[in-house]
Length: 127
Image (cartoon, rainbow, N blue to C red):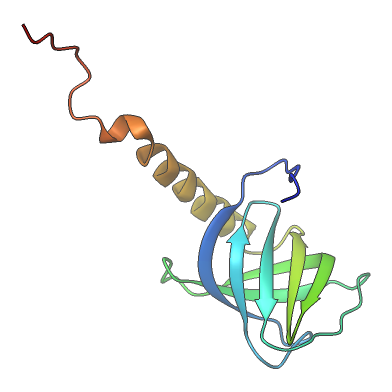
């Protein structure tokens, strides 16, 4: 697997992505960060790499309605009958909500560290 060089950590997440200008079928969110996301669509999609697209991302863990984000496609990969697209987010009306969501994800990651699984951290000597 190729090593990825990213400035922001990506979080695997599940959500529904609607992009009316791009595809009539909703896509599925694979991962998300403050700067972008990866989405796959169930059909081949043709897109203009120079165009901006409006995405409505409904996240499984967020009930406040979909995030409305403006983005540019960065790469596209067609596998069999589906299309994976990497998007870079532009400044959008819901950028503050995205920042709040990513902040909560970072907090979850800290709580899931190995240190939170240790019951007692003092050494006990058995004689």
